[in-house]
Structure formats: structure tokens, C-alpha cells
Length: 370
Image (cartoon, rainbow, N blue to C red):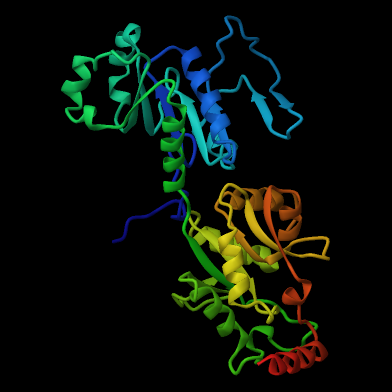
């Protein structure tokens, strides 16, 4: 008899304690930690970093309203008196490439240990938190490793070690840790559309001697992307992802792909853009920016990006669901109002072919280009 399960076993995002990628800094006082975070952040300004810390105020109003302070650059400082909740924190930090944590207050899945002679007792107190040390930072050059550290971690001296003022070395090491968490890209060909204006399934149209859905898939597979068809309903075909978000069009197909694998970035490609070629696919992959919500194509004379020729990063998934919760199911609306890397190309390459007349014209043009 099979074991009863109360909840659907969904694929989950690979999260640490509070974020998808986190590093706690501990071993010295809070001022040294925040100062190091500030200096490192300026070196890694092309990434989205957050700092998770506890309030150091001696008196905090119990009923204080959460504060959202927007700075002129567009980033936001959030102050709240709410209790720490790992599920809420993972939502709050979902858009960041890395969260640096004050390890004096919260435990991080990865750690940077600062050796500070006057904080030996503090390190001993938190010894069990040091289960995944990435590297060491020495506050002073002549400081020795504490004996209990060597006893607990015999190989600790073999780990990379930087002086506190070696900001380039520290920043480059953190950059490597960020890049190691870069999501792989998978392909998604949207074939479940209604094709109302065309009058026949656009995915089956023949421009190049075979159904366009096969051409689109080959374009993505030529770039070594594991590629799936997004379909309205699937008979458990391993090459297809059936729609779990019904009657939402492409929006539902994208969310269904993320439900299948929330730890991948998804290169979404429609079948009604037959002029998209290998060069454009390569261009988008070349300019992919995992720090953004997505990397999208835009025609030079177009006002908006093309949501169905776009690489959606894992951080796009919670945003899509937030838009759905507000009653919106337009991926373009989400992209327009999010931090997106835009790659501009000539308009002709991203023409949508939606009517029988447009199909005949496009097919004729494609034949002439051969």
C-alpha cells in the first residue's frame, strides 16, 4: 500500500536558509562586517546584492510600521519589525544574486570567517555554524588560527585566505561563488496556442520543409539547450510540458515550465516568428544577463520587447505569480515593469505571422532568401 501524501510533491527552488544564494560573514564585530559588505558591494556593483542584518538599536518600537525607503538610484532599503520567516525572506530575496548575512545574528549556508584576535570566544560560540567555510579573511596579518578551529577543521589552513584590505581578492572570490549558482538554460517552444486568426495551428505551418515547431526546437537545440514543447495537454510525453495554468495562453506555458524546473532559466520561443534564426538565438544567449529578471529581444523601432523570444531567469517565476495574483496574465506587462536586459535587433526578424495572407507572403520571402 502506497503512503498517503497530503500535498502535491512540487519541484522546489534550490534555496539556502534565506535565499537562493547566501554567504554569512562572522568572526568579528558587526561594524567590521557591515564595512566589509559595503566595500565589497561597490566592487560587485554589476550584481544584485542584499545585506541581511538585525537591528542594532537599543530600543525598537514594538508596533512600528515597516519602512520602505526608495533611493534615487531605484534601490530600496526595507526596515521591518516583523519576525524572521525563512519563507518570506526567500520571497524578499528572490531577485538577488547573493545575500550577504551578518553571521553574528543569522546562520548562512556558506560562510566567510574573519579572524579577529579579540573575538576568539565569539567564534568558539558559533563553531557549529561554520560547516561550509568558503574562505578566510584576516583582520591582521600576524593573527594565528585558533587551536579549536584547526582541531575541528584540520584542512582549514588550506582554504583561501585574504587580508581584510585585499578587496579585489575577496570580491573576486565572492564573484566566483555567484557565478557558480548561475542557472542552466533550457528551451521552451510554445505550441499550445489557439491560432484563431490563422485558422490552423501555427506550430504546424511549413516554411522550411517541416512543421515550424520542429524548426523552432532545432534552433534551440543547436545551442545545446535541452528543449521541450509547451502544450495544452500532454500524454506524459517526456518532450512536452503540459499546461498546469489553464486558459492563460503563453503566460501559463511559461509558468508551467518553471513549475517543472524552477532552477532553470527558460529560453521561450514562439512558432509564429519564422524569421528568427540561429544568429538571433546566439545573440540573445551571448547577451544573457542572469542578474536581470530576463533577457529579451526588442525591435529597434518597436516600443516594447518581444515576450516570446526571451530568456526568463528563475527569479522571473515569483514575479509572474505575483502578477497572476493581481489578475494579470500578460508576460509583456511583467517584462515592461521589471529589470530586463534588452537586446535590440532589426524589426524584420521578429515579425509575427498570424494570418493566412501573412503566411503566404512570409513563405514566399523565405523561399527567395534561400
